[in-house]
Image (tube, rainbow, N blue to C red; front, side, top):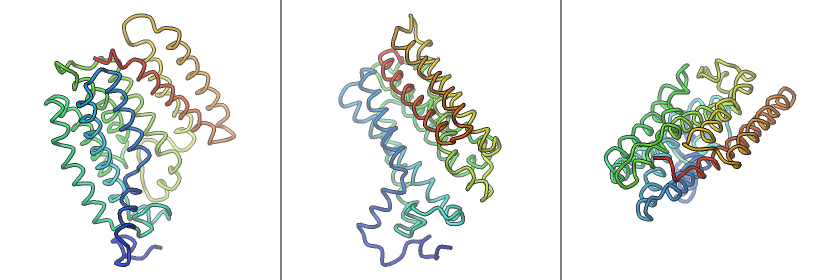
Length: 288
């Protein structure tokens, strides 16, 4: 069991160590991935250079706030589950400092989002609020999937509404975003699902159980592939058809192999998600 100093931050922790701990506790992988994807989508959608930078800054601060909120709120549960490698658990940074960083990032996210346009800002902040609701309450309920669906749907909508004239996003990009969000939720929870169950977390994937979550994981991702390939006006083109076929084959293979090797299902889901991201960027010019 960790000492109290590991929850609050030991006095011996150096400034550089605390900064490193803050960087590690923001969930840097998802933060970088989502920010990079939305910046790329802003470019392919036709936003100006300045607006692309503003969009990326708004998404970055929003994702940072969500990641820090998650680690700060889950600190005691993570300690109880023995999840070493998390900065707050290891005592690299104090939980109060992580909360402070979360609220500071959120405070920056509000004006940056609204600077992209009123409706764009409202949509993006709705997605960020949904993610905070997940961290603070909905994570342990049967509705844990909903914040992911709302948050991921809001991101491409935010990019579309940031274009000149603030056009409404196409239905298919919002739908695909929501499906990607549900798939991301299943994929994010699956590696820790047994530890979560041991500490009383009962979100939607936990209620499905490890096997149920593993089998369901590729379904929303392949559905997103279908929406991205077939949703836009006009024929899907050979690349769209090929991507959809690859997503379906990989998902089926992952489900079959996952009966013996659990990692196979997760690897297949990641592969399908990469296909979805490629399709989203290919369709970027038509998102509004």
